[in-house]
Length: 354
Ligand code: TXA
Ligand code: MG
Image (cartoon, rainbow, N blue to C red; front, side, top):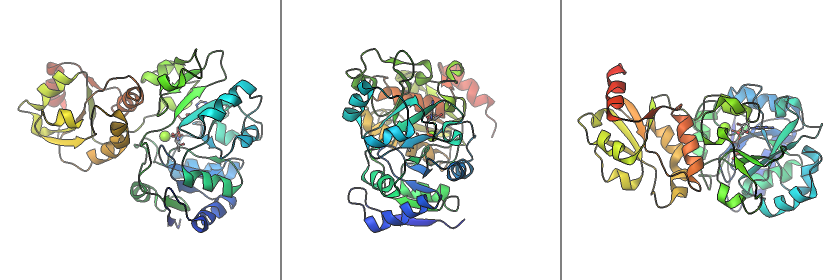
């Protein structure tokens, strides 16, 4: 497939280039576009035929539903049904932004988009290019993250091109996204609002709007029980090809990287931690600003496979605020592999055969 690359400024999008991309959406083609969180791989949300191309391009399982992106609140009724005025009032305040809500779906949304569920995930992104594209396409755009299935999400135009060139019709390159980590998903179809995937919008920030909101077990890490609520959770996610382990606490992390085995390893850690350890390091940012860690997390996971070293070992972070989303992605990227003691670390090294 021939892919057209359009370089578009994030803040002042060139409307002629947006027009080229929206014409592709109208022709039932696929467009990779930036959002404030991560890049999305979009198609016309009302066209089953167009949305099937998303699954093929990403090699995504057909039962894993897509988020529908809208550019104005009046479009909500086109994709969802029976949304209460209380919820609409809250969304007026919370959107546009990195928050996805699960609602009862409108019957016009094809099963391809909703994975056959009776619900639909909807969000209004806060990115000038995304909003201009949706508006100009004159239709809601269904879009998962733009990465190939199982790979880390894509946060730069360059990574979109290197991973997806030839697999989609258009790639918009608007440099780095603003946050680098996905939206928070909340389920509003149950009795109690529940965070099913933590993201940029934190629990603490949502609490004033939904005072009984809970964090579901899926949101904390890998948990197979709640697959029915968040179907995507059962799939492998964000994983580098090289083995990645998370370390339970900072003192064990320091002990591992100050041992004689440190030059076999790649450290993925904060700038503060990097000053205390030896060896090859990928820096995530400062622990004092976890938004910086979020911004660099997926980039860092992509770099792991480019470096020498037997295995990569990532630090764990405090789970308050944005830390909950960071730890959720780290747990998934490391497939739940946690190092809890130095003895266990030695066993892992002995068992790894290179
Ligand atoms: O920041 C984001 O949310 C990005 C940008 C592009 O908007 N999108 C994104 O999409 O992360 P994706 O497909 O990578 O992740 C969406 C998750 C999947 O795990 C999917 O299973 C879940 O949302 N999902 C979608 N529709 C759902 C529904 N109706 N009920 C429950 N989970 C749903
Ligand atoms: Mg994804």
